[in-house]
Image (cartoon, rainbow, N blue to C red; front, top):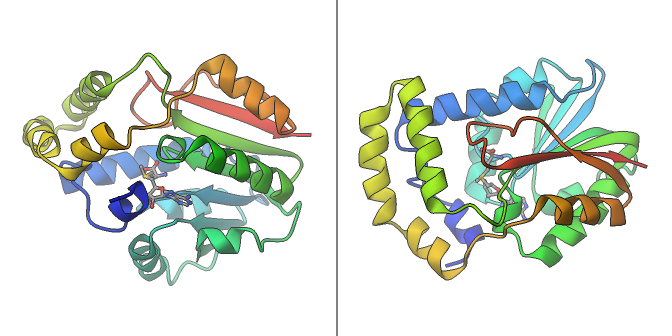
Length: 229
Ligand SMILES: C[S@@+](CC[C@H](N)C(=O)[O-])C[C@H]1O[C@@H](n2cnc3c(N)ncnc32)[C@H](O)[C@@H]1O
């Protein structure tokens, strides 16, 4: 199984419905904080189920949700069928977006599932679709020195504040016995150092910095903001 196949099914990553709802609420709030203004065109690449994408759509003119998993896209299309600002596309269709037409590209919690070459190609794609001065936000990037125990600690803190601690404890046991743990051990996740990411972004034409806060609940991970030159 590859990461791509893994995401094309229900996963045990979310320990309960409450966890999933709180997670996507937080992600939407954080993405909306990067939207430059009400007229912006936003591409969320690797958006996942994006349960609260309507909150992001409320802050921009057009929201393009792109995900590699057909099942995820089907659910998104059904959920947001009545939301005229939101469209759902496959990664192949992202290449067909008009060049220099996007104000903000967000990829949150995506890079760890991509080989470095895929990420390199995506940087080129995103740069070509962004307007000059447009922003690329890469969230939840895993630094080299962190591992599964850091993720467990972050999840437990999130669960405590969100009132789903019991579900989190049970979910951690389920995850430990699941394909996710096996795949994480077999395929691994791609990690990046801060300086390494800044230099990759500079090579591809972005003036970049690390943001003060990561998108989402895990503050051991990093968010980078690049401006397309
Ligand atoms: C961990 S989820 C992240 C979802 C969401 N961005 C979030 O922050 O919760 C990763 C998502 O990326 C999608 N994905 C993986 N590889 C992709 C690719 N090459 N292009 C587009 N989507 C991809 C998966 O289908 C999955 O829905």
